Length: 86
Image 1: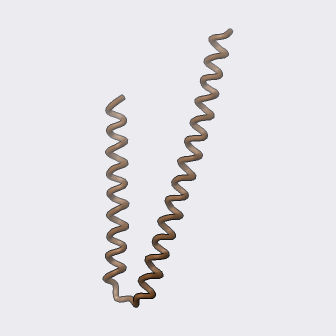
Image 2: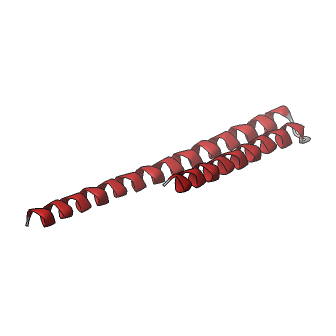
């Protein structure tokens, strides 16, 4: 299914570009905002922490989906094998 893979890659590339643009825009906005250096560093630190937490959450969700898919695949293979055996 080459079409499906290509569409998924395109979607992932667009999502990655969008996320990168949002992050870059946020950093630039913070750097040019009329705040003290300490406030700016704190905002950047909070933003980085939020980004890390979001990535961690996405990774955990992906890990759960992969585990669930793996279990379903194992069940399907077992069922097919049992049906062929009988």
